[in-house]
Image (tube, rainbow, N blue to C red; front, side):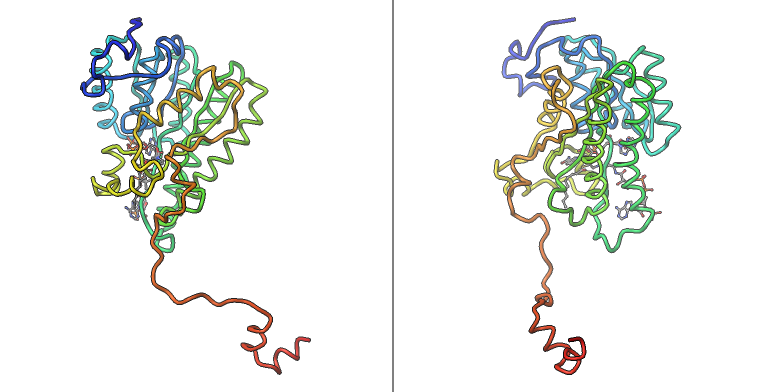
Length: 314
Ligand SMILES: CCCCCCC/C=C/C(=O)SCCNC(=O)CCNC(=O)[C@H](O)C(C)(C)COP(=O)(O)OP(=O)(O)OC[C@H]1O[C@@H](n2cnc3c(N)ncnc32)[C@H](O)[C@@H]1OP(=O)(O)O
Ligand SMILES: NC(=O)C1=CN([C@@H]2O[C@H](COP(=O)(O)OP(=O)(O)OC[C@H]3O[C@@H](n4cnc5c(N)ncnc54)[C@H](OP(=O)(O)O)[C@@H]3O)[C@@H](O)[C@H]2O)C=CC1
């Protein structure tokens, strides 16, 4: 395993195959990880950084073509960085219980263990909540909440319960509600709560469970394409206290920290990765024009109902 670190790259950020990690080379050597959604965007960055740090990585998601092209990119890059680590591709829809069981068992049978689970796979579509059909609601809740639950449960029951491990879940900036993403906000709030529960229940098994919550700001082409607009992130940076959008690497490094021994006393926690966006009040949702809502006071009730009706209630 090469010990080459970022410092050997000149102007590394300008180079097509550049990769750096703030963590020491070999940190995750001998470890085995599953990254759902690891063929694109944030998941691909997490897979790359784990491989760079010596981890064996299984990437899993629904679409074979996305997995294949993601894996090809990762392998090409790995060769150029001079690192040696094993990347494995498995197809899995995290909404399907049997496929989840099979993903975990295949990983354990193939590599003899499962140290890390990164439940990155997920997403949603944009819609006013009133217009979401039940099928669409279920698709999003099953993807983000139920899929995370199934992955956690199987990783625990099939391996981590008796061997320990670390799980990192994925949430989003849903702290003040999620206009236009009501289904996903509700599901992600569930993920944050599930993370706390599992952190407590599974501490006895030496399993830590944490979560990251990126803002609506982590730029990747696949994330943008999901909204049918490659420029969807334009303009978001100006509304963030740090005055910019975020990078997939900024999510990956937080995930690697949570997986590392440096986080060995942290469990049940959710880390926001949003440049302060969720603490700042600029709305991401513009209120429609509408008249003020009805207010309540004893006098206004009296006036609305009339003196006779009000007296009859005395
Ligand atoms: C406004 C600015 C926004 C900036 C946002 C930036 C922040 C980014 C946050 C992110 O999370 S980026 C990640 C983006 N990536 C993804 O979301 C990928 C995963 N998403 C999906 O696969 C889908 O969205 C899905 C709905 C979760 C699952 O799709 P699946 O293929 O399983 O289901 P479908 O058969 O396609 O649909 C089922 C059902 O869902 C409803 N529906 C789906 N898409 C839409 C849509 N675009 N609009 C309205 N409704 C939709 C619909 O009811 C579908 O059933 P049918 O009615 O079509 O039979
Ligand atoms: N980008 C951002 O600003 C933010 C992103 N997030 C979340 O971060 C995660 C990664 O998003 P990002 O990389 O930006 O976007 P991407 O669209 O690139 O990633 C979503 C990934 O999830 C996988 N996926 C979706 N549904 C399933 C499923 N049912 N089973 C297995 N895999 C699935 C997709 O693969 P496939 O299609 O092959 O199944 C894809 O690789 C997602 O959960 C996203 O919602 C949260 C907040 C903000």
